[in-house]
Image (cartoon, rainbow, N blue to C red):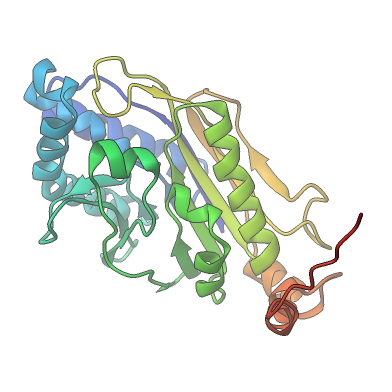
Length: 292
């Protein structure tokens, strides 16, 4: 299969038709490059706040509500495009009011045959806790699809190895991200690459890119697309299957063979995934050594 990860810029949207045209153009571009699985970034749906005007878009809380109110319609657009182009799509995440006390950060997943489910972010960043007041949603899920077993670790989630381990059966882990600085981008990228190493799987990272000064939520974004695997036999020695250019909008595409993942898990140069449980006895206690 081919995986495409987006370096996606937020645009000022004047009409719903303009939004539909943008998403349709992006999906058609990736499908035209032969992509089977498309990954949009974290909080990419925040551009929908522009439809409620500049004052709403500039106000964090009001923009959260405005975007949440439009996610049902956005889902219909993505579902139609997934079926039309026969692709699987992880849509850009959004803060969604869905029965919890506060919104959750939710990414919807659409299949080429009309299937749909979602993944909520598990661990909130400081900004999400202190400024957005976005909370953890439902549990981690493993999506069993025609393209293999797929999990999602949204941005900060990718930096926590136990979340990655919970998805140990996944062939591919998608990492949609939104980072305001180069350090944040690299934290997520290092997390994504570490999860590929530990799980002997492929991780696919998408990023918001560029400024959106009109937004009170995501006014500056730094990143690029990237697709990573274990640095082992049959994969690049760097672990990097493909990477984009920093802050340059567009798709990053790589070909992935599930047989390569199965082979390296069974007979790789190293077997992190199989040897994971050996840590448990080794970390039950730490010996203190007094050196003077």
